[in-house]
Amino acid sequence: MTGHHVHTGRGRNFAGPWRKTPGRLFGTAFVRLYQLTLSGFIGNSCRHMPTCSEYAYESIARHGLWSGGWMGLFRVMRCGPGGTHGIDNVPERLEPRYVWFTPWRFWQVGKKRGDPQG
Image 1 (cartoon, rainbow, N blue to C red):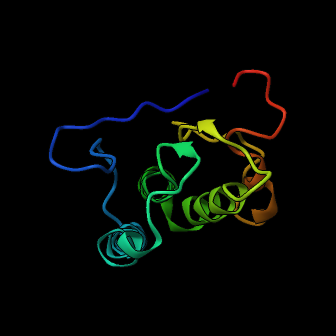
Image 2 (cartoon, rainbow, N blue to C red):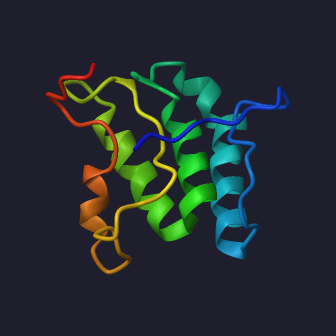
């Protein structure tokens, strides 16, 4: 179950349809602020495609601030040395076991170390 990125040429972030709730707007604005300010100082060192900030933006837009925020945080944690790498798209839909009161399960969303597909 892999997500597909929808780009319209206007920017680098997910441009598909998503509900503009206050939490999602806050979360995506926070990620965008990071992209416009701190990202330039840190450099382009992400080991994944899409980058971690693009992944966080899309996961918040698709799944809301709580679920998407956890997914983005865990993605950044997997990006370090010894972590995962390669193509790791945001899933279009989350499995039923990913619920708000079990945020630690969001660690398992996406590509895992030792995945034979890449």
